[in-house]
Image (spheres, one colour):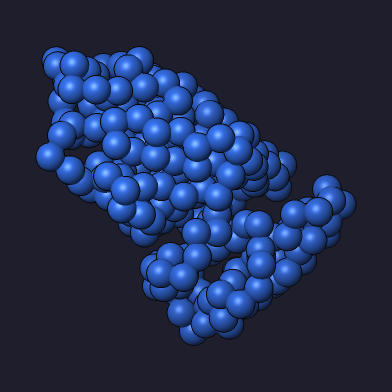
Length: 232
């Protein structure tokens, strides 16, 4: 039974979501204060956190930033307006997905299940390509034998690209796999996460290449570092 922490000061919404998600088989914990939510998230073992932005005590952005120094637990961010700026900042801070209020509880359920599917261990074998090693069992990443910290979504994108090393993975395929929805021309969330991956895997060679208008390719060797772009 997956454990979900909901941090939101809307008590009526929290009560509705608690009842709904518990009927779907989740164990739900509710917290209405940002600082207390951070304390609980940092000390208890949750499978996913649903995080609102507008919170008393500590806002959602500050909470997420502090949480990411301690934990890679998946975070689904709720935005009151669904504005691009809120989504971009949240994704840059390490959110795994976002949902704009108001929303249908069944859409939230679908998003939660999609995120949880991504974090399930799909293989216990370590994979190493072009100096980057990933271990799906422990979800550890090493670049040139140095450990690299990854968020849940960054790891999943990297694993997908590494498993397809030498081949181009389309943005649409990544969006379907990571978010369970199709990409839109204005949705830059995948591009932002790939940009974060590039910074974290900084080295003297190109590891992730952009194929304009198509998607991304993890370079299996120096031979792959041909036509393409090094930046998202």
